[in-house]
Length: 67
Image 1: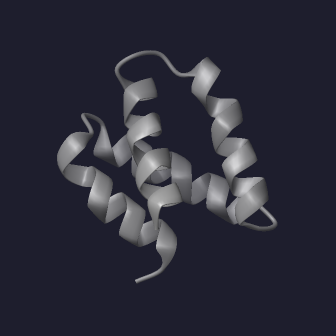
Image 2 (image 1 turned 30 degrees about the vertical axis):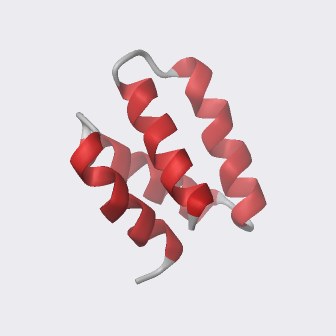
């Protein structure tokens, strides 16, 4: 299990829109050149997201950075 999948697994019980979250982070992961770029892309999504999905993104980000 890679870091992205592990963070998704850890976040799953706490997020409301898991499928949407999984789709977004996997798309950003494929687009990113490295983890730093991925985190930057994800951070750019936060202000555009509306609640409660923004909270889902924050939860995922917290789990990803903790790994």
